[in-house]
Length: 278
Ligand code: GUN
Image (spheres, rainbow, N blue to C red):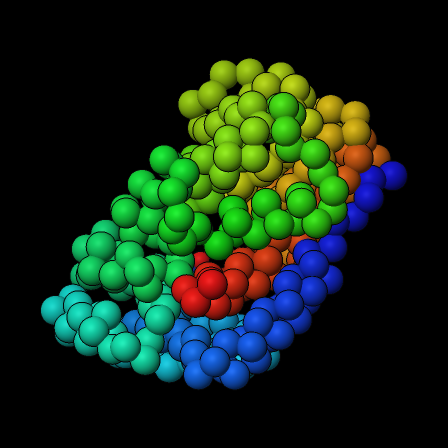
């Protein structure tokens, strides 16, 4: 039976560490402050944004909320970002994605100052990550590295296979695992022999976006399996990209859904907000 990597518990420990750090910063007259921008009222985005604001409150980070109507123009949104960039009280800016179709997401991401880019989505943040200099790292991949480190999963010299090549997860994940001295393979929809490649992995990271796609036939005995997916099934239950019941008997360690990678994303967002001052 695989060891369960408990993201809820690990994220709780990180948030408690941050709470102490924020207290110490406050004592020096430094007050971390995150501006959260939501355009429209996509139900999933509203839930995410609320959880981010609650996380801020828990660790003592001030949060400013900007809830703009669905028909907000790109120009108006860019004006708000310019004001937040110039506001010394604000040290982190988060624009919740996806944005309504009439707004160019790339332009918005580029408008956020790289010094306040707590999502790590700005091309400069991605560039810094790729050459290994200091900068904000995308929260989900950064959270996965913390899950591995805090569960004592060795990465140095290990085979890491990532399934998925998105800008938010797959690509930054590959760069981070390289930084952790793993041998990294990135697979995607055009990859031949996916099963065979996944079976080589000591650490298998599934970020495909297909419910329960990765079953035991993709997993080497004793491998660590990280599940980034989150899907709601017809019966209302949540599941990941990994078929947990099938993989659990083969893997050495596995993240559950929910309670695995999900809670880590917010913990790392809060970490990014605080790290501005560290
Ligand atoms: N939408 C889904 N995930 C994210 C995230 O991590 N950051 C932002 N800004 N939007 C998202």
